[in-house]
Image (cartoon, rainbow, N blue to C red; front, side, top):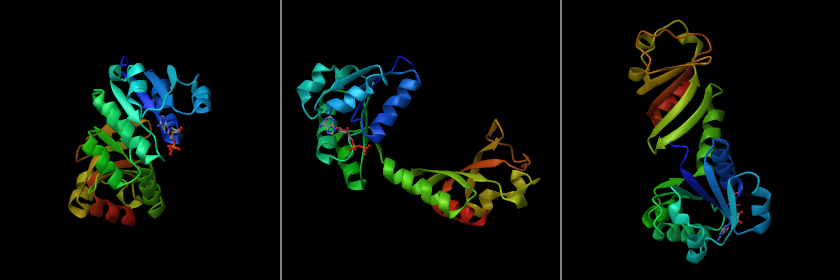
Length: 219
Ligand code: ADP
């Protein structure tokens, strides 16, 4: 992504503030907006620009030149009405790419209908990650790619050490594909079938949820 890309983040709660700070740390220009004056003041040194505004008001957003931002993140969480209205206003003002945070599936559907380009569910996603992590100590991370498809990082089971990917054949056994192997600092992307697995290797695997679950409970 070009570093001249400009981001606006609306709603500086736990999620929005983390998104804004991280983008700024990565070197992007970030405008952070919140209706709460105290919140905004605390944030002044963390991003490029800050603004106090009620973002359900189209005129305030227009005055901030929201249209000129490449990506707008609507991170208002608790107040669903303010979240939905803000997304609507941002869309109507012609922003090209809107990311909106949803509290649940219904809220997400609503945001989709309004025209948000990407809907994120931080609480749900983190809950899933923690749960997958709890099920098996070998699972290091889990990301849902779609309702039936997941990506998981697993420590290789001891029984796999010294064997090649072709020999363990995870595709036949669990219906999952190894997209990469993490070996210390090295990342082997699209490993060859004859790649032998070492102690301490971490597999990055994509597959349907049921296959991943079987893999998690067997490793
Ligand atoms: P999280 O769950 O990520 O912590 P919160 O819902 O607690 O998110 O925080 C959302 C932030 O959005 C708060 O700082 C709040 O002041 C801000 N906010 C709420 N309504 C509006 C609005 N209409 N305009 C601008 N900011 C708003």
